[in-house]
Image 1 (cartoon, rainbow, N blue to C red):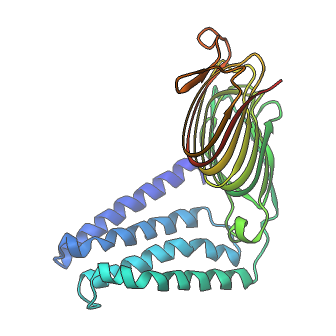
Image 2 (image 1 turned 135 degrees about the vertical axis):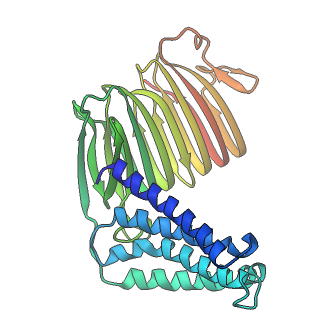
Image 3 (image 1 turned 30 degrees about the vertical axis):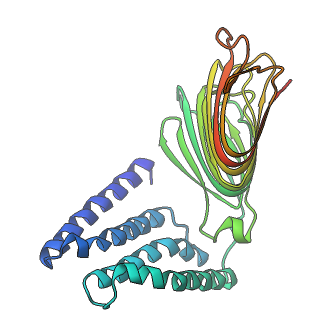
Length: 322
């Protein structure tokens, strides 16, 4: 199934679901104060459809429906509350019921961890450029180890993905990669190690959304236009491109360690906003002026990077490379 078909099915599910919400409200003459949990049920139903579209046959694959079922169950209970069927208001129900929800989820995952299931193994992926003039790759990587390198000639991306990968092609040069959770959560009970090759032949945008991950991103040979990083408790090192012209880098992190290596001959402008943590900038190459660190030749340099980093607790290093 193509990305366009998936999008149409998911969009159709939302439209049908919203219509059903309004029909139920009209049929039972519910006020919005009573009917709002129907939208919680709708979120669960839409998530159920989206998960089903990427499901791989396995016993353990059933566990990927956990959060969809949770949304639906919570919505049903809240609806019974708002319509007076339980005799308890939704505020009191949430205040008293959330510990039981945590216990139920904990038991569910314990059973899932001990239930027999398959192993995701290692996937191999190779996607050709197919004439794309530029590329955009989105990487959703909850936890594990992620390494990037230049892809083979003629390829948009390639690599090996221990723990499994799900990919969606969203158009020419547009790809989304996500960890395969069909056999459970990789960061809880199995390894997830990705070795990913990215094209160096056409302009490239990369977006990385990671959690508790260790990432080493070698983008030195790429024609990187933009890099977006959203990460939690991770350790991330990025080698920036040597000859990509202008590159924009935006990073948001929680409790993370970020290191950016700027190759020799590449100018940089660095802006950092840290709530708590430390910043170490190579001021010999990037002199400080107020809140900005900037190469003296930034305005005229053929190759330059603009780094905008903001975060909570953690460390930031910007170092010069060879």
